Image (cartoon, rainbow, N blue to C red; front, side):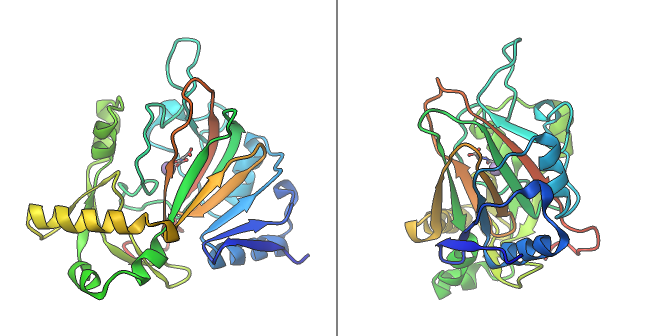
Length: 282
Ligand code: OGA
Ligand code: MN
């Protein structure tokens, strides 16, 4: 079967023609993988997948991560992380981003081997359905002024989960904090599948450019953060029931847009790990 994918924003976002992801054969899977290398984000509509379908489909792209925030995992399927503002019967949040966190971030940029991709599926949407924005960090790098490219060339930056959590007063416990010490990654990475370079920094978690004085580091980071979220690099997804969005987490930064917190919202995410034999950093 020839997979149909319509470009929504250049080669950044493609919408896949209606497809049942529960019954994808191997040749269609190969086409999906090729499409996911052509586009950084694939949008699926009209999905009918339960948690076990979501896990099975995601596993065809690689091993799945068990998120460090274990209290927000699905009980039946710990490969699924809940993203939600909903509370359980004891009043505890059932998912991450329950505090109104809207910081731009890369998933798991704070880990030594960060995720290669994420698949986010809508479960319960607010009345206005809500939005998630994505920034094309490959195009943002390509179009960066030459002088800025020269400043960051060969440099690393510090990535901190702690910084994100403290910015939004997210409760953490000692065990989790110990599991996620700050790490350093190259600021410009070469995508292991496509060879494209991308900026690997985000306002939510990148705190410092290694080797630059504090004030210079701050100024360069702020310039980069402003640059990467210019409208020409950003796609904002308006969610519909049955939507799934799969993004390349090596070159796509994202954030949840604010919504009416009196409305309930639950999204379910799987996180695809890099292959074990892939050398990191890349
Ligand atoms: C995520 C995430 C944003 C949203 O799932 O990693 O950041 O809009 N989600 O739910
Ligand atoms: Mn995220």
